[in-house]
Amino acid sequence: MAIFKGAGVAIVTPFYDNYEVNYKKLEELINMQIAAGTDAIIICGTTGESATLTMQEHKEVIRHCVRYVNGRVPVIAGTGSNCTETAIELSKDAEKDGADALLIVTPYYNKSTQKGLIEHYSMIAESVKLPIIMYNVPSRTGCNIQPATAVEIAKRNPNVVAIKDAVGDLSVTATMVYLSGQEGNCMDIYSGNDDQIVPIMSVGGLGVISVLSNVMPKETHEMAMACIEGNYEKARELQLKMLPLIHALFCEVNPIPVKTAMNLMGMNVGPLRRPMSPMEEANVERLKKAMKDLGLIQ
View 1 (cartoon, rainbow, N blue to C red):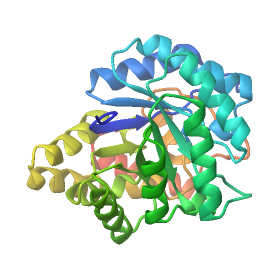
View 2: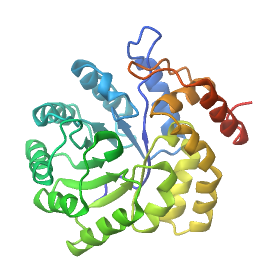
View 3: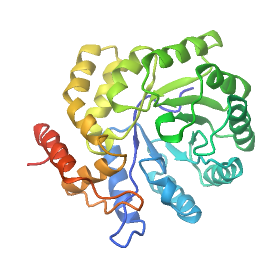
View 4: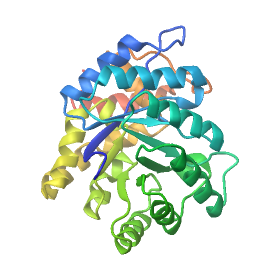
């Protein structure tokens, strides 16, 4: 059974001006997302600046989110690491704290062979009972799960049930859908790119883990639901309408633009932790224009 269908938000981690985690604001964002129809909360992912959270903060942010959501929607905890033992520790704690599923990014920087990826994911899967979503974003990690490897991992580990596909190549996505189908549909697929929600869902994806949803949750949910309902005319219209904003949200490294956009909308999610730096002024203007065109700001 799928962890969720539709649009899950890769939610930001809000900070006070002194860079401490703003849990009150996180609660406000969670409530806004659920009220808008968001189908799952993904906490401590890339968009949540997990790389700059301390181990203690990482665990506490997941714990707080799980408790505050209180079963209203699934909470998927980002517990990946380039160290297998660290990923296992984070995953065990997230399971103990009540997360519904885990999002495990490929090992970054030190990378891995395909054999190493099988071992990495298998060791994590064996340490917990929670369902796991693999996260493949080679442009960011320098590490790529080949389609056959992803399916092999899912075949070997029954609780590895899905992949967040941020490769950006629809041929790769289609190949994964095909190979998974050859093995009894052993692996669900979620889009990891907001500009490919409709294309990926058209070849069998179940939804999206979305950055866009931080600023347009209702519309992102509606786009994914239109695909699920087979109304691709509506889905395509929404995808193309939001494309300039999506491109602006990724004109600098995520989550720089999305946090900037949220602050422009008055959400007051605070600063970015270094090494993320404030957005370049020319790109801020580009972002503002895309937001104005959609009525998000005046």
